[in-house]
Image 1 (cartoon, rainbow, N blue to C red):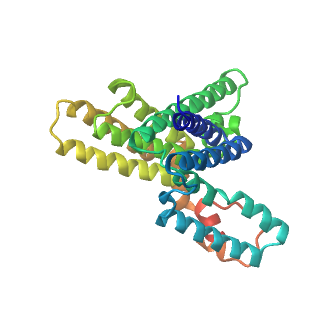
Image 2 (tube, rainbow, N blue to C red; image 1 turned 90 degrees about the vertical axis):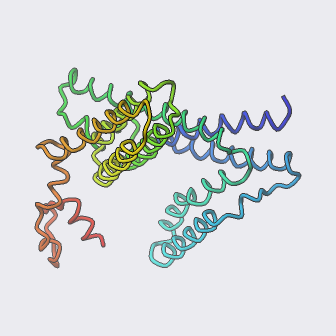
Image 3 (cartoon, rainbow, N blue to C red; image 1 turned 120 degrees about the horizontal axis):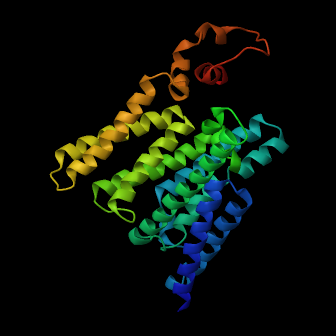
Length: 294
């Protein structure tokens, strides 16, 4: 194995470790793996092209990320104490370093991205299965409330944020739908379609309102595409997409913990946030809280 291929193998490993650490919220490992991707990428670029810097670094997305970070830095330095500003800026460095790691070499191509996305999907599936098993154990053996299956409690084994995991899930969900459209399946067609249903159920359990709405919109979009496309597999894909869409509609239209989060938006008194003083015991729903913050 020559040096370039050896570095390719290392980059592949670093990316898989980064996915695991990102999804499981292992922040220290995320930082280390990201640094390893950067260093290995620069070394690969030097060996392959003779230059440390790749032309991929000259792209509008990376430049926009750098400008956005500078905007964040100026805002924090002008409004927050120096200690708090330094801490926040350190946390926000991922805005620059993640796109920099992706663009620092020519390692990522269509084939590599597909392999890495397959890893991403399976890592997500296994992590969420573990969370589900922990929730089942708490519910049946420790006699916990059914809260353990929803929102932050569901991903508490990894001390993750439910909305963040919902976004990770949504990315994988869209990838699976797109691969269904192009007839490129993970492992095989039944497993692929089951993963779509599985991810849909997990998105519902995590109860992020915007992610659920966008997932429903994606189902409608790909459902329309399936209707227009003539294929031998159209009936199977059509049935799977319809099942997912019907499941979302049933969950949101019946009385349950998930639909309650949507109904809560319209049930609050908007005059409440116009008060000048607030009692510590006042409850704000999601919409009221965000309007109050704004």
